[in-house]
Length: 224
Ligand code: HEC
Image (cartoon, rainbow, N blue to C red; front, side, top):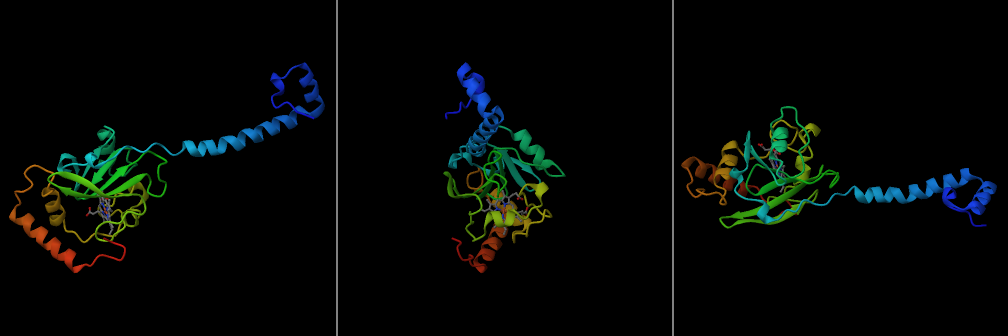
């Protein structure tokens, strides 16, 4: 016997049929059908559209806003919201579009909530930079390895949760072997910035030390 799926909209004859077969069973069947279609639909809706990012999204590092030793920006025009988290002394969750940089060639950009659970929606970038601008060497999530063979995610995931993958110092990450002088020199000599070819003696010395350090340390297997 055919059972009407929507007893309330069926005609008189159908209502009589429903009375014989029990409306409760129909209600339960309807609930099961609705549940089975609505769960996958919810999962699909949970992955938000990516924020469009290409090489032109990145430029001179010091054109971003300095916060302590690093720089921040926001690709969606929400700089105030990004600065609020970056300057907080208790941490927070960076808003979508946030750009964070310590050195010219490595960038973290926050995608929208639900984009990548493992990286808490951070996308990692490794750039090549020159006077002409930036090119994206690598981008992605847990798999991105920098030119020294280090996996961005593996280090940054160690930051305590309230710091949302931002390591700085004292947030729980293993330290990087760069001194403050080396980091500062890299920032001031970003070739995408105007005037970056005027290198001070101190910055030149820090960069020489850095290149000696890099030669001593061969890239890890799998690195480039
Ligand atoms: C060996 C571990 C390690 C690897 C590999 C690594 N980072 Fe970091 N990163 C750090 C540490 C530690 C700091 C903080 C250094 C400081 O402030 O003195 C940092 C700083 C940063 C910052 C500034 C914000 C912050 O967390 O302090 C960004 C952005 C960043 N890294 C992006 C990347 C990207 C992108 C990659 C991969 C292409 C990468 N990092 C690879 C450990 C690492």
